[in-house]
Structures are given as structure tokens and as C-alpha cells.
Image 1 (cartoon, rainbow, N blue to C red):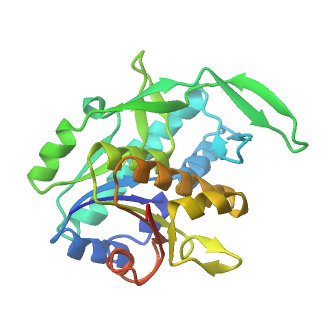
Image 2: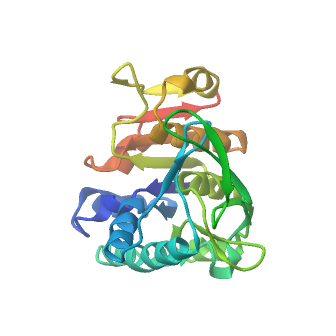
Length: 269
């Protein structure tokens, strides 16, 4: 079984001894895995130390994202593809997991189209059009290198940075990256690790829900979780059998969610 797992960059801050890495060591003995990681908080912290104030914008759909100009994409690439990606590689290698750190730039795994314009909504709800900067939308996935690594029992760790048409790095959403990779690789399951127990409605975690029902409750879901749910629905549309959303800080988070004991399961039926 092939699993695509998306995790935040802060989940592994405790190093190789934390429950996620130990659990992952068990999981990779039975399944093929591709990891996609985030790390926006650390990007913001390091950018601040470098004197580069980070700006965030809200889309009309309620998605909050980093405004990525030239200086920001340089810092973003340095932190994400350099510091964080290699920290995760080291944490996995410490547990004997044969990890390979990559970004979407390597072998042009992720190609994207630069967003020429963005629509941002201010605090008063007013819309304005701004330059798209170095933000992109993935248009193509080259799976050959990933398939080769998986066949040889390596675990690829992907930083969500894509290659533009003019060979520049572009900031692409991590959850959407995981969903698109899951679709392209024909993965069996997409696991989205977050900092809450799962999809929360009325203060309670929903154990299982079908895609048609999720669409009805989308207006009740917060911005951060909404991004994950939209990514999950995209993966289901393209053949992924299950989307699992759960906390990445719990004990045995991957094993328990695969057994439907924790988190939220989203399916087509």
C-alpha cells in the first residue's frame, strides 16, 4: 500500500525520539511512504531574524497564505528545502529509515504556473488585486524519480516548492501538494497530520464522513482545516481511496489512523 503523508514542520521538533518517527519506522516495514512537510512558522521566525517582515493575505474563499516576493522565496527555499528538510532526513535516518530529502525543483518533480495576480481581502472585507509574486499552482508532476526511489525502498521527503516555466522556485501549498502527489502516484491513502484530533464540528471530532457531506459543512470549517479538506476532496476525486486527518502529536498517529481508531476518515462513499 502506498501512503502519502503530509506533516507540519514543527511536528518533528523533538527529534528522532518522538512518537511519530518511531511509529513511522513500523509503518514503512509494511507500506511505501512519501512524506510532504510544511514549516511556515519557522520560515516566519527566521525571516524575522533576517529583518524581512512576512506578510499574509486572505483569499475571498477564506484561505490565509504567505505573500511571497523575491526576497521571501529565497528565505523560504533556504529554510524549507535546506534546514527543515534535512532535519527531517536526520530524524528518520536516526531511526534507520532510508530517507531522501527532495524539493519539487529536483528533477522537476513539481512544475507550476506562476500566479500573475492574487485577490486579497482586507479586514473590512474589501477586495484588492495584487501582484502574484512567487506563488504558484501545480500543473504537472513528474513521478519517475519518486517511483524509482519507492521501488528501491527509499522514503522521499518532499518540500513543497515547485519549478516555474521560467525556472524559478514557487511557493505552493503543502496540503495541495500532498493531494496532487497522491493523485499522480495513485496512492491508496492520503494522511494529513495536523495539531488537532481531526475534522472538528460542533466541538467534536467527526470519525467518518463522506465527501458529499463534507461539502455541505465546509462553511463551518475554519481556514486551516478548510485547506486540508479541500486538498482531501481533490485527492478523492482523482482516485485516492481514503483521506485521513488526525493529530501528528499523538502516540502511534499513523498506525492508529490507518486502523480508523483516531482522527477523521473521508471517503467517496
